[in-house]
Image (cartoon, rainbow, N blue to C red; front, side, top):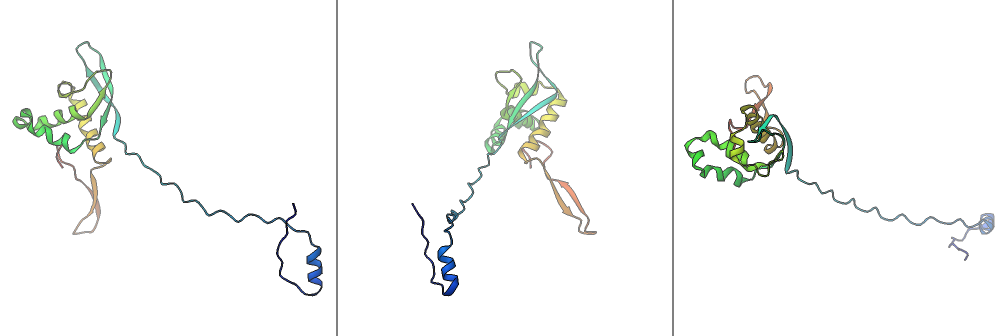
Length: 164
């Protein structure tokens, strides 16, 4: 099949040379650019950790690797009704961590009883890790001194878990 193209009438020699010129195939018009597909970001809700010392169970097995999930508002509110927390507010972090740690070594279940029997260094590690995970990696803000205008950082987090 031969392609033909419409030509504007030309005068003189240009018309004759144009008539004898071979027809060149024309490239198809470029398709409109497709809009880029929206990138769906998945929210990371679970975070792996490794305890500095490890939890030692009744059989003497040391459990160090675990997973902590993001806390919900419910996770921070429910422990406030716990009688142990009402009698001793320092117990809040134990109950809260017992709710958000989803895995620890090969233990079938993690609860506040496990957390309260951890070494103090592991508890301190988990408290710091909780703050990092639930504050998107930081609890600091840059501010400016009202006197000298020098910028510096301040800690925004509370002193205990569940406080802001």
